[in-house]
Length: 318
Length: 167
Image 1 (cartoon, helix red, strand yellow):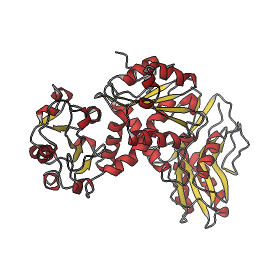
Image 2 (cartoon, rainbow over the protein chains, first blue to last red; image 1 turned 90 degrees about the vertical axis):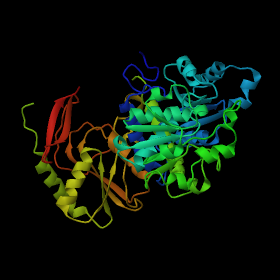
Image 3 (cartoon, chains in turn yellow, cyan; image 1 turned 180 degrees about the vertical axis):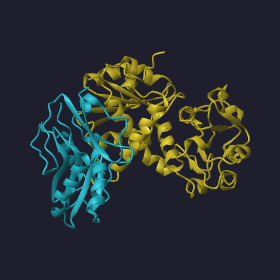
Image 4 (spheres, rainbow over the protein chains, first blue to last red; image 1 turned 180 degrees about the horizontal axis):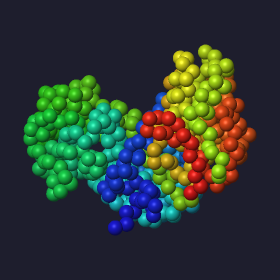
């Protein structure tokens, strides 16, 4: 089957989801990101790779951190950056997504970074754009958030270089989480042997086992001897009906506390994609504790996004 | 081509002797990936002096990025010393068009303002396209554009040169 993310030479043209990408491409992105980490520590935090290119961040759904890190990443590659919060502009006047994209293409945009509340929005745009234009999915509905998945892999690799010998637990609202889907695909593609998901039945998608994970409903059992603890945000804004009794009840069963974390390996790392609900899915003492790598995740996010954008921009046919 | 290629190991010794007199406490060696880094590491041993040194991968500064994209393997550049006011000797294996050196100088300047930069190579094969030339080269070997000259390593780490037809 043709993969819409790859060009005819098998190079990455769009980044829409981690699902379906070969391990070699994931490793290429992670290795390239390794080189970019140095750039952010220099006197001049810029390289000229995307000089003269225009990157449009189109956010149909708000996200300060993701947009900011994409913006910094593009600027460190010397691109010109345009930020559009479409929810507050033309969409309210009835313009369709593709009209918005066409207009920006007419202004010679070279790359779109797209966040949308509907799954598949980035795919739709990627099918529509001219051949020289690249699309990065910055989160679409419940579907995928590939750069978050990649920066999580980068973080894990930094702290636990032997990916083939890891036990990883993903905990919380898997049902509504595009981050969880991207993480699971990335972990299994990179050969992590044991991926667990820990969640109440109401917050798990059907057939989640088919993604190659082990399901736990008891957090204490699931945390036993894991190397990496990946927390998810409880997505209150996406909750409809009564999936959960209350936030307090959730914290009691599925919130990460020091006491529960003690069941994991002593050198386990704790991750969270942000923004955190302190006291709901994670206790402040853990979020700010010695085992937390939540802020390094943010820092690495810049290098990973620089890697993605430069690899895409370099895949134009000569 | 019937003329045998020069012995890379001899060229390396010759290059070290060319560099020895110009080295001062302000000198730093910077190798360009990947051949230049190999040579730099050997030069450090041959010169046997405590010299500041670093490595550059100029992939992010190349002028043919739009045509070729990124190499599948880029390595982090490492310049673990203050570039400001240094005398920097850039090291590469083969000097050809000068575009790699242009990219390397651009990158170096993003770390700071060196006092001066010179260029040392094992082989100058001719064909420069920019006003850049090596100050130190162990061998001049003019080659036509359809040839590709590469520095390679034997399993025991000894260097050798290989000449191929351009793909």
